[in-house]
Amino acid sequence: MDAIRIRGNGPLRGTVRVSGAKNAALPILCATLLSDGASRLRNVPALRDIETTAALLRFLGRGVDVEAPIVDVAAGADVKPEAPYELVKQMRASVLVLGPLVARFGRAKVSLPGGCQIGARPIDQHLKGLEALGCRIHIERGYVIAEGPGGGGRLKGNEIYFDIPTVTGTENLMMAAALAKGRSTLVNCAREPEVEELGRVLNKMGAEVEGAGTDVIHIRGTERGELGPFDHAIIADRIEAGTYMVAAAIAEGGDVVLEGANLDDMEALVVKMRAAGVEVASEGQNVRVHRPGPLRAVNVTTAPHPGFPTDMQAQFLVLMCTARGESVISETIFENRFMHVPELQRMGASVALRGNTAVVQGVDKLYGASVMATDLRASASLVVAGLVAEDETEVRRVYHIDRGYEHIEQKLRSVGAKIERVRGAEA
Image 1 (cartoon, one colour):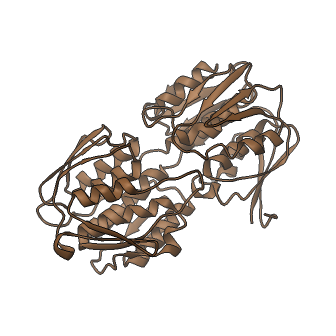
Image 2 (cartoon, helix red, strand yellow; image 1 turned 90 degrees about the vertical axis):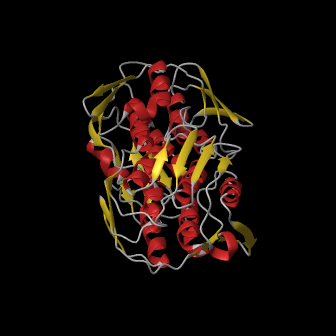
Image 3 (cartoon, one colour; image 1 turned 60 degrees about the vertical axis):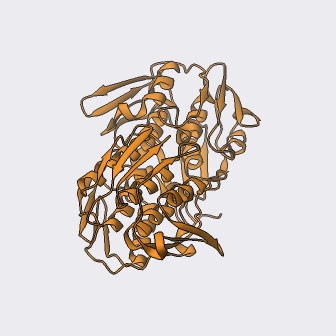
């Protein structure tokens, strides 16, 4: 099992290219099931989650060629609408095949999902929405079995209200509604940029989607019962960009240009970075991050987009570990998303957990240690901590980080970090 070793050596300087957004690529790849044609997705990151999704599409019967940054999905109509546990357990986003399959083929059998252990992430909103479109749903031995009206007929448009905003739930129902008869209205939708990106692609495929990226989305199902193929380059990964933004700011004097980053997608994070004393500015198609002096303590509460993203909570907490004063980090999205805190405490961080809140007292320095990654974003936070820690830090179980960060050690090394991947390290 691989590990990543980092030796803290001062500020980062240079340019990092931001990869395409994993969380945009995954639902768009699943949307290829709505068409029999050949589709191409560009600017795709080389990640485990992309390979997992490709493997799932191949199992379902579609030919997929992954040569990052391009993924080609071959034409074909011979699809088996069953997604097994062995594939779905690896990644929660695999549940995104449920909506397209039942909408396109009238039935679907999809394993209940897996993924990072950061708390309960039920799919009840997905299932409630599909039932509103006419599906008959039942759970059998860990599988969701969904059938269209009359045992496999076409879905029917309806109004769907989400009890809470859910990104994958919104995306699943957008794809299902794109093939339903008539008009659907989704209310209390997730507003993430990745949802808006899926709406763009569905429209390219011939759907009629209005309002993606807002809390109300209107969709008129196509009359043909299928959509066309697409050729699309996805947006930059705002979470990867945010992670490198924190990495640039973790040591005083850091000065890094994030190539291809979009500040509009990171407004909540940028506000907090600036409040902490970090300079963040657009430079053409890029973003420059500079830390000119000491960090100031800042309070953060995670919230659905456009609030502060839960996927940046762990990284920002690390930034606050060496800020002057006390900061309070409140997590409102997932209940188990402070599993990185005990590992940071091993590095000398002063963090007290109080339920869903972490109280951080800034310290003068962090110290290298052997630490264990517990999930995707926690992995990134520990790597960032290692950049400023005295002596050597070894982050183990970095298979988590490979799910969401393309060549992280190479990118950090290109801006001056002393970082390496160790193959076959002990678990």
